Length: 90
Image 1 (cartoon, rainbow, N blue to C red):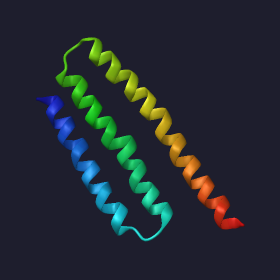
Image 2 (spheres, helix red, strand yellow):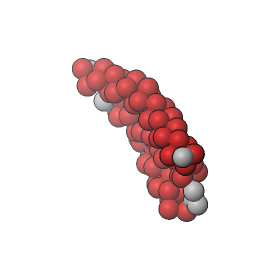
Image 3 (cartoon, rainbow, N blue to C red):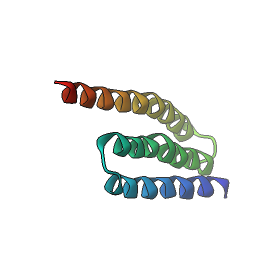
């Protein structure tokens, strides 16, 4: 039950940020919408899956995936913003 709530919240965040990608005017605000999806929506979806899955080997894999996404998404957002900033400066 609780896992399903997390899954639906994650889907809701993904839908909202997808709308934001098309509605926002410039790169930085679009990047902000995408990073919310990556960090918030994906995390909520995976937490929901872990809660629905009971404790097993798959739960451990989901937790490892959560940690990987948590580290990689913030790094990707930074690299994208920095690269865009550098390309506009030239």
